Image 1 (cartoon, helix red, strand yellow):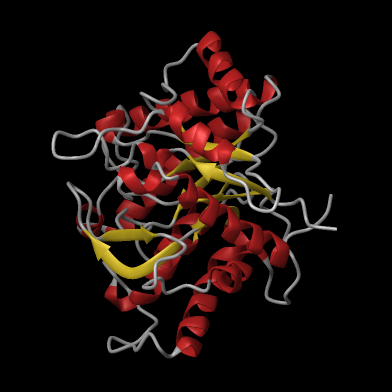
Image 2 (cartoon, helix red, strand yellow):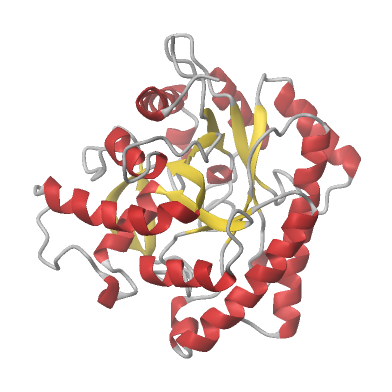
Length: 348
């Protein structure tokens, strides 16, 4: 009998991230992405749900209960559930820096509170059985570099207060390890931040396979690099050992998991420092063995399933609209996720 856990989800934010600006492609409509997700099928298996970015024009962070019910009806009408939510905690989205002024930090917390309330409402509507709320420090690496100790302390204080808000709503928070966010831009600093927050099970790590791989290369934090500067990607044993070192350090904190692929390159966009570029499952330049390296997160150091992630989500941003609007793209992604579940899932 095939495994039915963890549930397989698709992310909705690739339809918004990197889209909509005058020099960018248009935002992909929420309904279009839902249809593509619901339409994906591999040997009779379909996606179980979606993870949401709670920002307009998909799901407005200021939605009232009636608006949330309409969103839930759209999703349920396609046979899908809701998992994790991304809170729009950045300054440009109405939030603020987690290590900024008192006003900025309060805006950050307000966005977390709104996202947790939406998550609670979706659970009460019966559409959201699993998932946390995703956050990051909303501050750049250069700003953090000016005062590393003080910066991490302030971020931790903000995260701790955000964790109390989440706990009050029966939610948990997950900080994604993306190398453009100050205080989270290396695996050692990510661990230090979570230890400083010290709210296990309430404030944890969202392991994105692609972003976490970039920790091994030391972008934006060279002293924490694991792979040598002249690393040859043909030597898979070195990558495996380095990636396992990162996973072993962060797995105890991991509450949410993104399946993804990466070609090992970075780029800068707007006010972001170097950050990771996802690539497709079928990309010949992809550096990860998706099924094998997913196991580094979904199994513990003894090889036993952790069972922490009740759903896993595909994360792929910055693809051209023409690629994202092809049904075959999502069939390929679903196929990879099914392989991950077959290798590292369970029956329930």
